[in-house]
Length: 73
Length: 185
Image 1 (cartoon, chains in turn red, orange):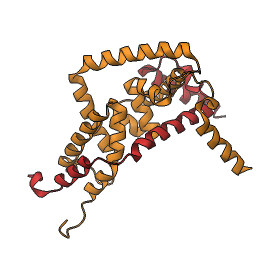
Image 2 (cartoon, one colour):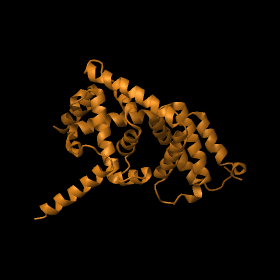
Image 3 (cartoon, chains in turn purple, orange):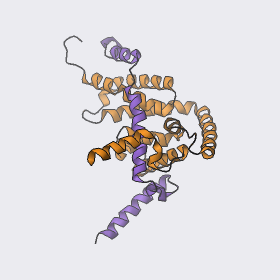
Image 4 (cartoon, one colour):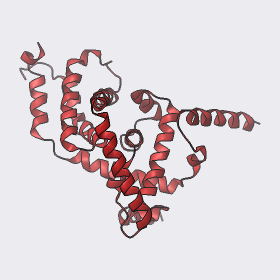
């Protein structure tokens, strides 16, 4: 079957990631999917709060000044 | 606005400013510095908009400019930054190891303590939804490097927060999980 091939390609990708900097290749699968999902949700929640913050005036002012022809010259 | 065609670049840039701010703050921690970084990025992007390939990913392009700007500035003040990070991280990891669940540090604090490259990878993949391939191009490294940074970031977060199961992540997530089960059943 193709199992051998699959194992081969898996080994190759592990080698790629470990050669760069990963000290413990076994860690890749150590975290349960459930826990990964929980971290992802927390992350999106915290990040979403930052995204939702009102934009200070300085940014709209900057955008306006950038689009003025004079500032392009 | 003189009846001319609306500038889509300006429009798209404006729409992505919140993302730039959030990414900048995740990178450099300090909100004031982050906003300076975003403004600098916007000016650079505007000046170089001709080099942006129409139809490609503007967010990835802008993030790359912001990232490069941040890194070149940080190189100038390298010692300062490294010392601060090192001292803070060592203090908090000792604290975390001793305290267990009672006063474990919260997600934002743990997130701030991640090594820069891991925090960045986690934001790009986990929060902004870039693919591993896109993130690798933006960071100028191998796809496997991004994957391993994300994995180590997740592991480090759990370690810092003293978490070893999804149930430890607090009521918000537990409730969300339950309600989705309830609606499914």
